[in-house]
Amino acid sequence: MEGQPDAEPRDREQMDCEREAVGDEWKRWQRGQVRNTLHLVSAVAQWILLLACLIYLGIDFLRPTTTQSDKVLWTHIRYTGKSIKGVAMNLSAELGPIQIRNGSIMIPCDGLYLVSLKSSIYMEEEDLLKLTLVKGTHKTTSSALWEQTVQKSDTTVNLTTVLFLFQEDRVTLWTNSNATISGLSFSLVLVTPRADCRS
Image (cartoon, rainbow, N blue to C red; front, side, top):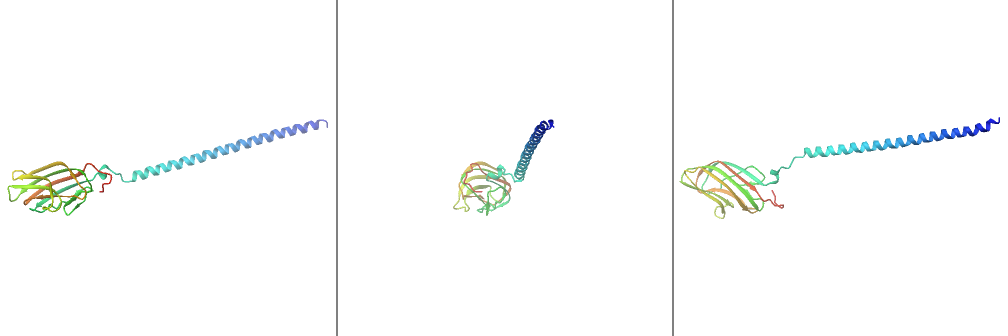
């Protein structure tokens, strides 16, 4: 019986050690659970971020691109037909954002414009013909921007120049006699755009 009191403290120590071991094991398991939870939250956050990036890139890819030609104001006209003495040619835009109304090119804002014109002309009556690019819609009140005299022996007209035009100007093309205009190609491009320019 004398050994029993010694056995009791040993059993207590052993039980205390086991409890500590179990408590340590429990704490390690809890830390592992916290670590696993943090890894899971981090992985979910990374996947959400990756998905958001893919959606952003997908939307950006599907959005129509704004090319330089959308930002630059220009027009390109092709014309084949008869010109009538004293009447503006009935031009119509083939391409470009600059508007054409009633055969007149509507200048959208002040600036330098690159003008290019090429055409073949066949005169029907006279030996000389004047081809005039004018600012305005009425021959009497318009001012000439460019004028070229064409002889019967000449059949081709070429023009490349830069003109300063003002907003609300209207540009038209006239002849001083009847003629057949073939393959007229006319381009007008704004070279110096301003921030307040409207298309």
